[in-house]
Amino acid sequence: MSMTKPLSLSFELFPPRTPEAAGKLPDVIKQLAALKPDYFSVTHGAGGSDQEGTYETLLTVVEHCGIEVAPHLTCIGSTRANVAAQLDRYRGQGVKRIVALRGDLPATAMSPAAPGEFHYASELVSFIRQMHGDWFRIEVAAYPEMHPQAAGPGADFENFCRKVEAGADAALTQLFYNADAYFDFMERCQKAGITIPIVPGIMPITSFQSITRFTGGCGADLPRWVRLRLEELQFDKTALHDFGVAVVTRLCETLLKNGVPGLHFYTINQAEPTLRLWKALALNAHA
Image 1 (cartoon, rainbow, N blue to C red):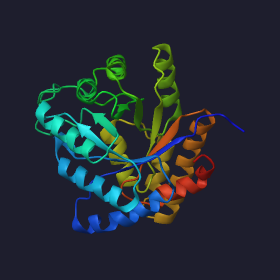
Image 2 (cartoon, one colour):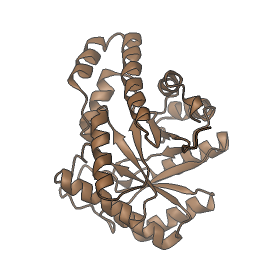
Image 3 (tube, rainbow, N blue to C red):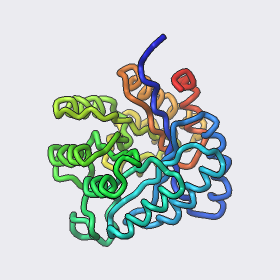
């Protein structure tokens, strides 16, 4: 019997933006929870907005399935007192895992320096450790293809190293469709002596418009051949979904063959695209 570590498998949700979307979320959670993921992460909006939405979504997850929840906590535009209060509230709810992020700058911010008392995610990680010791397992973000606002690949990697040094337990990557970008990042981590698990972030492909928007917004490479095929198939929903599943399944198979510690699925609050990938990858065998 294999003694390898079990894969970490997790799903990301975001606070629903309309009453209709909020009404659909419990069923999505129920379907995804049936796959028995390690945890759900719950995002919130740019510029530190929508913290309340994160909290409400978190409670919905707990209420409907009892699977561990990891709220995203950003420090942009926030104060130490505000972050401390959120951490206390999450701890009071029994939350044991936090995704610690700098967060997106508000659209009005002209300077790369973040407003508020925290400027970088590494400062947030240090603050969580200072306030709560090892109570929380802290996940941070990794950018195999560089954060779009970084000065360069070297500076971006140094930022990642600082988050690890500050006390991060693991990392989740930005979405990517080029496995070599992840492998190159892992080689750099190995050379830097970084040993924490770095879990690939996987985004299902569900439409030409949304995937070009997502990849454009975060600076991720969408291979030209994939983009051209998606553009051609954009009005044939079934064919596009089938092609998207094939592309992302191949990516995940390549990652799994090369010993990744897990997969983190960006579900976009939909169950079906992730369920199709899960089935294609026969992930129950890994659970």
